[in-house]
Length: 636
Image (tube, rainbow, N blue to C red; front, top):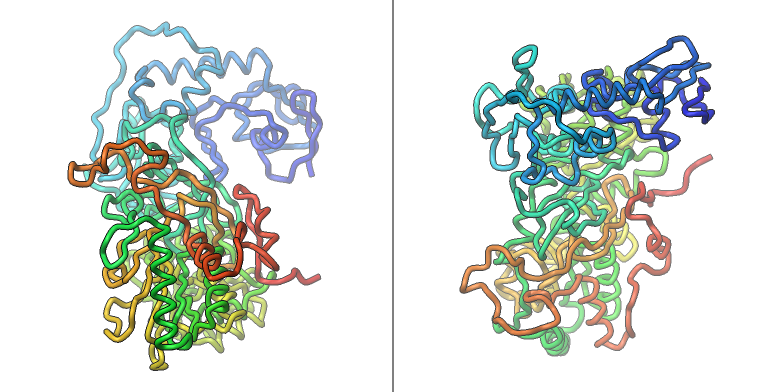
C-alpha cells in the first residue's frame, strides 16, 4: 500500500485511494462539493485544492482527482491552497443568492459551512446575479435552480447511478441548467435522493418545506419498515409529526441511498384517522380498562371453547420484541395456534430462507453491488424491494451479467432502464459456475426450490425477498415455537377466537371467529371487527429490533413521542382543551408492552426487557452500526 504524509502525519492507504479520501481517513476534512463516496470524482467544483510539497507531482492539485502515490507530501493548510479555496468560494457566491434565512437547506448546507469555514464573509461583487426559472418536479421535490453551484452530483446520481432518463444537464458555459425538458414529476423511484445528495438548496423536500430547521428536528437512527431489506434511515419529526426521512449510510445494506417509498411514506404515521384511542365494543376507554376487558373476554372465551380454539397472531411488520412476547403469551395460555404469517406461501418461503442461509452464503445489498453475475427469479424487484434494483444496477455497471429466470419476472421497459438482462427458462441455464461472485435473488413465490438449494450448495450467494421488515425473525420464531400460518390455522376448523398483533389478516374472516382483540397503529379492517381495539406506537415512536431479509438484526430508536400532531387538526378532531401531562392521543404503547401487561395480569410477572435468553445480546446492538447477522456462525 502506498505511504504518504499529510500535514506531517504519515499514513498508508489502499491502492487507488485519492488524496481527499486519505485525508478523511485521519480526520482531516478537505472542502469539497462534487466528490461523493458513492459517485466518485468529477473535478467540477475546484474547491478541494491542496499543495503537493513532494512526490511525483507538485504544486496546487485537486485532491479528489489525485490518486495517492508513494512519497507524496501533502499540505492542506498551505497559504496558496487556502487562497485557492477562498477564491473558488467567492466565485461560487457571485451568483448564489444570499437567501440562507429562507432556504430549507439552512443548517445542513455544505456551501454554507465551507463559505464560513473558508473565511468568505465580505461580499465584494455588487453586480447583477445570474438567475434561472425553476421547474415543477412533482409533489415531493422543490426546485430552486438559482442556488446551483454546478457540482454535477444530481445528474451523476440520477442518470449514472440510478439509471433515470428524464432529468439531466442542459446549456453551456455560464447558462448550465439542471432539470427536465419540461415541468413534470420526476419518474425515478429514487429521485428523493437528490435532496440528500445536493450540497446546496437546489433540491429540498417539498413535503417538509418551511416546517423546521435542522436543529429543530427530533432525530434518531432508524430502519425502514416498508420492505424486507432493512435500509437505514434518519426520520425527522417535530411537534409529534413525522416531517421527513433521510438516508443513513450503512455500507453493508443500503449504502448512501434509499428509495422514494421509504422516504415519502409519512402519511400513515401522521394521519388523524390513525387508531389512537382504546375501544371496547366501539366505546372509548383508557388503555388499562381495555387491557382488563381483554382479560375478561379471554377468560370467558377459554371457559367456553378451550385454549385450543384460540390463535395468537403476530406479524412480519411488528418488532422482534413484540413477536417474542406473542410466543410467550401463546405458551402461557396454551393457545391452539401461534401465527406469524398470513398464508402458507409466505411462511414456507421465509422458513426456506432461514434454513438455507448461513454466514457465508447470505447476500447483502453490498454483495449484490459487488457481484459479477446476478440471477433474479420469482419476484418483481421494483415493487417488492426497490433498493435491490439499485444494487443490481451497480453490479451491471461494473460489468456483471444479469439473468431473469422464468416467466415470474417479465422483462419490461421499466426494468431494462436500470440494467440490461438476459432471459432464461430455468436457473440451470444460468452459468453460475463461470462467475466468481454469483448472487441469486429469490422472490416470495415458492417455486424452483431444488434449483435454489443447488445454487446455494455450489457457492452462490442468496438474497431472499421476504414479506415485511421482520419476516426473517418471524421465520426464526415460527421454527422455534412451532407456529403455523394463519390460513392453516383457519383451515384446521378449530379456530374460534383471535388476538391479533399488527397482523394483516383477511377482512372476510368466517363470522363464527371472534376477533377478541386487535392491536395496531394502522386502521385495518380488522379493527372495525375487533371487540377490543388496542392502539400501538408506530416504529418511529419506540425502540425496537428488525431482522432483515439476510438475517441482519438492526436496532431502531425512538424518534418522537406518540400523540396527535399539532398541525392539521380540524375542529371535530381537536382534543379537549384541558391541562394534562401526556399528549392528546399519546395513550398508546408498543405492541410488546401491551403483551407484557397482559402477561403480567395473567400472573407471569413484570417484563422490563423482552430480549432475553439467546436474544439478550441484541440489547447492546449499536443502532448506528452495521447490525449483527443471525444466520449462523462463520466457518473457518
